[in-house]
Length: 190
Length: 127
Image 1 (cartoon, chains in turn blue, red):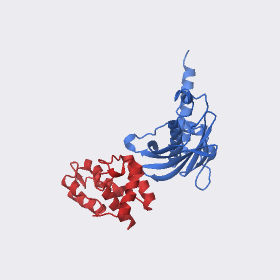
Image 2 (cartoon, chains in turn purple, blue):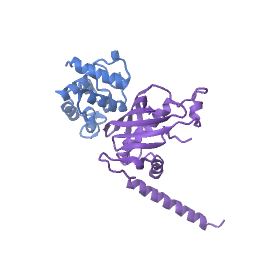
Image 3 (tube, helix red, strand yellow):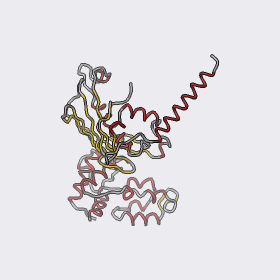
Image 4 (cartoon, one colour):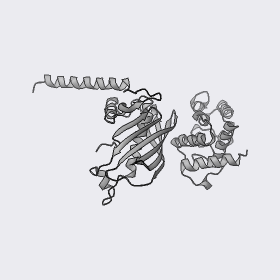
């Protein structure tokens, strides 16, 4: 099972706000396993979806180099259950940003109605947690493309945001490495 | 040193909200870390709530003068030197350093800040 609880970005304004959607299917394991006989989408996974939305929002401002982790769920209020067939909209709005972290307000809607409200704190890990990022840049880039982030992302002036050069370079290096390994495999006697 | 009722009640509300503690726990003498259980990430939340509530800007260095607690000019053998204490008093006039001064171990600095200190800091910013 992949630990992704959002499907796609539909709005992204640098360091300001982002909205993702998540389609809820009865075919997803957690729907029926969480409370057998009462299929619904667990609140904890909605929080995780907001953490992924908000985390990517605050990370992008640092070119996705920042080691961003969810540090605290200060508030999470749910007004209803999410059921199979629902499409949820998760909107994260940056409330505050400092060198050590950021605070994001989250609003979750279904059919235009507010389903949940939350406030999340993210920490930016420093060099004590290692020099490299939490994800390989080429892998993260591929995920961001699947999320269609760069299809909708703009800066505060409305200019399109493109994939950072360091991620594209990592992708080129990875592709080059893959081609080399294939060439070596082809040259070896079977 | 007294703090105003209004400032205290707003600081108290911020701490109750950020730390999930009861109002009777947030006394003026309570220490943020030892008594109220604040962790490092909570300070981001507390600062955000204070900024919002009082319309002020809080610099992390105001509350945690990292340089004084790490530079060899101010720290020797794990303790803040007399020069360091003087610098702390200069930068944090709102903090009661009398207890810390007696045994100024760097590792104890994190539990220095009390609710009263925080109130006086806020008052210095809104003055």
